[in-house]
Length: 330
Image (tube, rainbow, N blue to C red; front, top):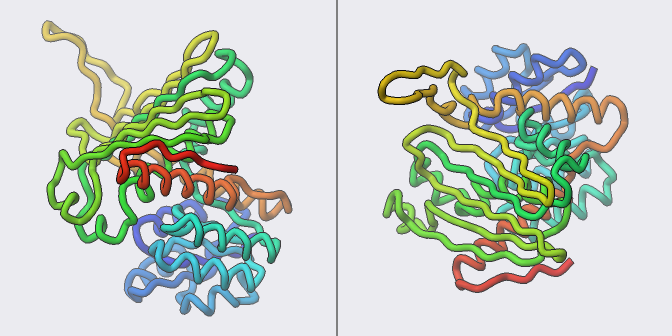
């Protein structure tokens, strides 16, 4: 049985603790958090110990560690875990700088430890099926990908101030999905952003509404649009247009009952936010990580996927700032 330690017992850490509890071949051994009460609550719920972070990193009785701490802590914790020889499951982004993320990659690859970047959307059943159909040639050659990702409401300004910005914090999931679906690396990035939701977000140096266009060397295009506000609930849609047709993954609704009347047809609201919408994806990604470590195979998405998405996020932020296309080199 794989023994797992958890660094960070906030909202996403709790999601991962729940996933581990549902996997027979893994157990949550120890947890750590700067807020002792948060660590204690998770430990009691899942039968784990509470320890300091450095104790989990160096513990002989722990095989793998989940890094679910604030992004500013990832760099040092990844280096320490690599040195300790632990398998690593790391929340996105690896770091707020692609250069520092690349330094993490160098440390991980030098230590030859397994590393999983937690891009959970790859494991969403609908998105995974779409990608499998795409890879099987169901619509011929991919020509254009359109990704819509809109949150129901913006996070607190305190979060915005430390998040690294919309491109690095929110859109990074969509940038990874673009790579996942295009099958080629984007070489051009053009981004535009505005503050249409909350002027305080602009005052904090960020945007709340953004559109990005990616282009690959062969000419494939991807359009991504993000908003911090969607009055109708969490909006998560993907459309891929190809030479022989189209694949589309629609929103997940609270239920699938449709009502018809004189006013027309009515459906249920979208699932409210990411915890509800991606519940199955969070479990599937943890299962994938555990199975890879237990079987001795390489987990995916890898640290290279994390660094590649971060490079795109940095390029999008730069393009938005300068108003120019950013050219990426291999």
